[in-house]
Amino acid sequence: MKFGNDYHFSPSLTPTLLMLIIFPLFIALGIWQLNRADEKRHIDQGIRAAEKMVALNLNTIHKTGLSKQVYRKASLSGQYDVQHQLLLDNRTHQGKPGYQVLTPLLLSGQNKPSAVLVNRGWIPYSGTRDNIPDITVGAQTRTVAGIIKKPAKSILLQTDHNGITTDQHYPRLIQAIALNELATQLQYTLLPIIIELDKNDKDGYVRDWQPYYGSVDKHNAYALQWFAMAIILLFLYIKLNTKKR
Image (tube, rainbow, N blue to C red; front, side, top):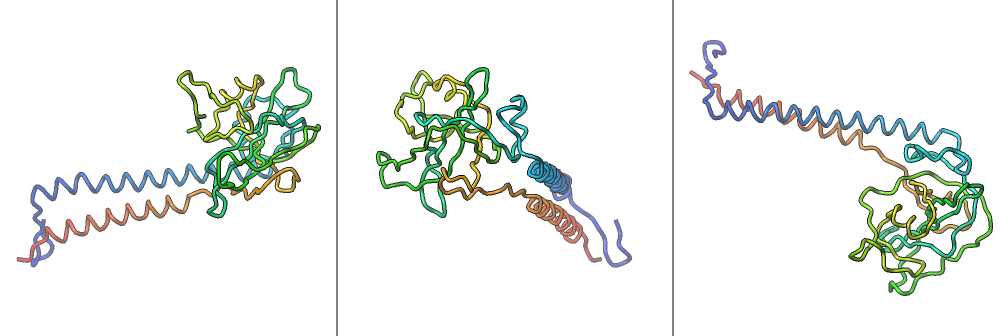
């Protein structure tokens, strides 16, 4: 290929093959990041819509599909199962180690016993796993409010060889949440969600709940980087393979 009378474009085989492999790869990675940004944008829009919706009454609604109602406000009435509280280990607040207090709330007016795990907030680590702070809460019937969340997917309780947690002492220290296993041990149904207790509820602890922050801008920035690298690669390919006569 000729560029005027002074320059001649004559690429060799090896850089051409590398160009045909790497250039489309950079473009594909940029498009993938744009698609990821679009996915996160839809998630953000869904969360904003959920936050504006009226609160769900978990005592009266149909329980199917609850896991799709994340970030929506909810209210529920019942009694805390004060005998079976859980401490979710390795939770930090402002750089300090501690636990999150999870208390099942048995829902009123149900045909069969069912409950929701209520995250009552963060408490500090007291220097030893045996010295658990007092997390006593009243067993009277109450109505609480909060935000619907889903437990993380990578959730397993510490188990023995039979897959059943051996520690039967409460409050029980757990590393993660396994709702099905907990429901088997507690002998009542646990809804497939967790409620983050409203900050104004007097029976909670530190509740610095963090809202969902999408990463749309981050993915767009990554896409721009991949496209820029593709342009730089194309420029270098042309420049290094163009010779002056």
